[in-house]
Image 1 (tube, rainbow, N blue to C red):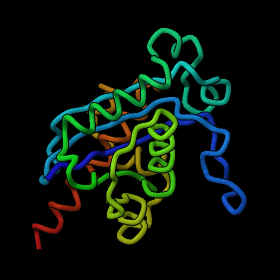
Image 2: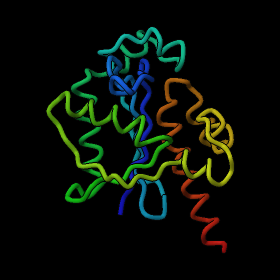
Image 3: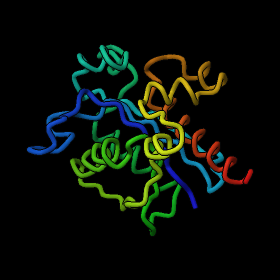
Length: 189
């Protein structure tokens, strides 16, 4: 079995989900994906940037500027294709794809699904996700994403991903770290 750890950076979020979807009016700016096996050992990784989005708010929150996106980004359609190709090449697409993430089902997954749907692509994602938010709130009382990054990033990862623009990939790796730690705790008993 393979898992895909995912973090999506956006140019905003609609918190009024009673009237609209969480992603209504907002776009994916970057996607960090990490493929890992059933032991949560990293097999592959990718980060993709979308230059088809205005990053005014994104620069303020994530440090990703329009200049950076124009240099390193690809079109939104190419982002969708690269995400799809990464998932297909690292998983068995005949079965629903199991995702790992922080609030994965309520944040990253809706943005990911919409990105793919907007470009006539579809991947069957499992409704059974590994949510680091739920894991940590239930075991350690830690739940904010900034607290999680601070608590679970390794020094090696901090050095490798210290550029703010790599935040989505860094967070996807941290979610795998959390799964590895929880697995080790479970095996210790």
